[in-house]
Length: 354
Image (cartoon, rainbow, N blue to C red; front, side, top):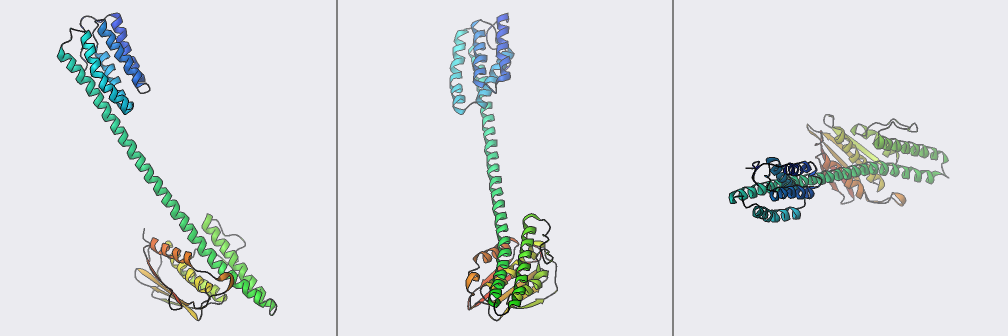
């Protein structure tokens, strides 16, 4: 009997018609003013009862919609208060209209209770959606922070590898130039040219890494993406700085993914730079073995004597960077620093893990 005439008997008077309008029109603003709309529509319904004018289907609909909106849109405390007060209001209205049978009051109560329950269901669903959206938002924010942190670590690794290697060579050449400045001035020129080449290439590589722009005109040598193909050039440069290196490549050379190729190059670079930084004795051995699905690297050097001055220091950040690189592409890395030797062994997949 949701839309049946529940209250009063007889014809709807002009005043009753106006009250019906008051019961229905305000529901257009129910979302902005739910409590006010319920009070207005409810008061109009009570007015109809007092005037012995039947509450029409439209009037009943307006009051029930207002009840639903209060339960759905207002605070939980207000919704509970309305639920408590409503039965008393229905009984009071029934006492004003003695002609209303008890079963009609029960029907009205069920209608209002149904409207309130539907509103509560709507409230809980909206709350669940809000909680789910907040959870997704927090998850996305956390993921964005993790991505940003990973990018910062990647940039730090790249800058460390480029700068540590280049500064090591520059420091060695600067020390060599100082040592021959008085006895063999002609040797200073070779040292300065080496410093110029190393610094220009380091700047070009940093520029290429940071913004992907073309290498500056000051670069002395052509710069390509670091990879195993450039290991021989790397070895020549380090031999020019005083390091003795043997390179052995076995197996059929295979194409690596860009990330795996860069990782392999950085491992060799960091290992040789570490040998140079710590004044490696004897010869350093670099072994590259290509397999069917992976490439193995083995870099072994003597580290029994440390250089003095600015070259002194550990390779903590470099080793941590190597481990992160290898882990990121799904490879394996082991480092042995005992018995006066520094040995790095790595096993890298030809295709980096996604």
